[in-house]
Each structure stands twice: as C-alpha cells, then as structure tokens.
Length: 223
Image (cartoon, helix red, strand yellow):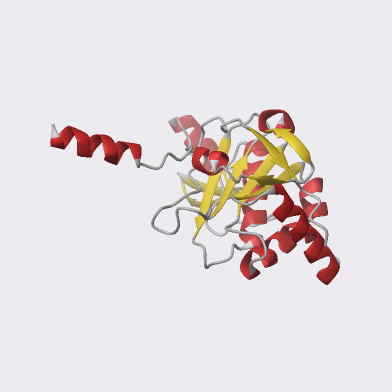
C-alpha cells in the first residue's frame, strides 16, 4: 500500500513535455495583444513559442529585445513569435513600456500572461530542479500544420542563442521545402544531403551524377 502511494505521488509529480511530431497543445490565454486561442493564432504559419523566467530581469530583457529586433526577419519567414512568463498581464505591459522607454524597442509580438502556470505545465516549461515558480527558457518550433518540429531548453541563468534559433528555423523550412537532410553546422546557402539510394540502379545513377560524393550513401548537392 505504501509502495502504491509513493508511486502515485511520483507519477503525479512527473513533468509532461510535448514531443517532436506531436500536435502543439492548444490553450486559451490573455496576452499583451489581447485574448488568444493558440491554435487559431498560429494556423497556417510557422511559430516560435518561447518562455522566459520573469519580467524585469536582465537576461530575459536581452532575449526579448533580440526577438523584437529580429521581428522583420521572422515576418519574412512566415513565422509568428509568442512569448510567455508566469507573470500577470499588468506586469507584462509595464515591462514592455519600460523597455520601450529605455531602449526604444517595442515588443510587438504577444506575450502570454501565465500567472496560473497552466500553459507552462502544458508545455513542460516548469522544471522543479531549476524552479517551481518560474518557467525555464524553452523554445518550441511549430510548423504550419500545428506540429512541434524542434524543442530547445535552456536553464534560468543562460541566455539563448538567437543565431541558432534563426538557423534552426531556416533549416526546418529548407528540409521541408526540398525534401532533403542537412549536415552538421548547415547554414543557408550550404550544400544539402540527398537521401541514400534504395536500389543498385539508384546507386549507379548517383555515382554518375555531379553530386559531391563522400560515399554512395552520403552525397551532397547545391539547392
């Protein structure tokens, strides 16, 4: 009986995290741009959902400012930005106003007020080993079909790498568009990896092609 009780408590305390390939969990929330039904808001576009530990904190301010400065870049990539922290809408608005007054940068993307922690729990943004009251720096890449395609997690005290976020977005979009794979450290303009041959005939055809051949199973080409 004691074993069952301990097991039940342990299972209740487990963190659930959406996985790559899952449909992004839907929710309703208040944001700095108004009420949001997440599935409606992101429909038909790529989305980057990212959490930060708290408003009016230094690392978070640099990150949110970075997203805001790259707003045009993400717009051009048909990508919506959605931020989140476990703060009230009033705190969010005050922070947005404070940053605008001090730096001239306006956070135009919606920031979810998750004071009840419902969305943070839904996306596994609460990591008890770090904090039970602040969301870690999670990043979810969601495609136009609403599927989660890539997940990043950073601790509370380490800021994200904006170059890697942008690189990952372009990589996902490129792989989808051209049905290819991408090698280590791939960047836009680099050669891509074509699928391995499935027959001897395909192997011989590949050997006669102008691909960059590392071996018959590893070949690269320009887009």
